[in-house]
Length: 204
Image 1: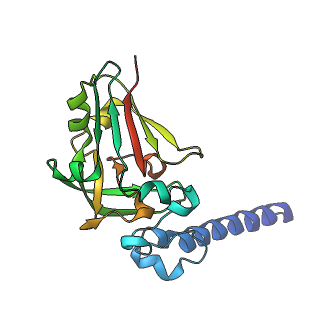
Image 2: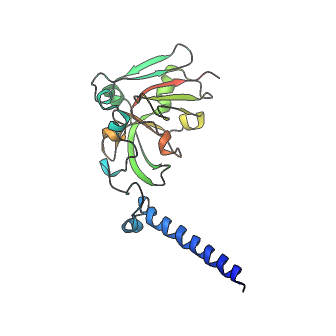
């Protein structure tokens, strides 16, 4: 073996060890058995309000005052004339659905929680949204890349996609999106819009 071959092998071995260590030292975000090794990860599984990590707090999003306002309402609009406005109490009196769904964050952590709320499809049906159309979700946030997001029909009409009011048996903590948030199967956490204020159908 030449000196160059030896250097190459040493380099590749070092890369492999470094990559393995990095995975081990951050995987505790998602796997309980690796939690003691979770030295460099930004979140820890099971820690945070309601035992769920938070990647953006209400204070950071500057929504606390609006989210806690008793006059908060959620507007739902179709592309035509359909429009309904719901307060939180009205939403809580509607038929509720429970779903065990994960949140997978772009930071690398994931966790599962028990959510309870109104099926998004029920709210869309009430104002006459076309099931073939994309919808837009708006947060109370005034700034930020995810202040608004869009949701394709196959997510919007999934029976487990909820306008969630509760998580793990209690009303949403403000850092988890109180008074209402979106939770949908298979969507990245940054697209699970918190602090909802408006849902509208986009024209084709």
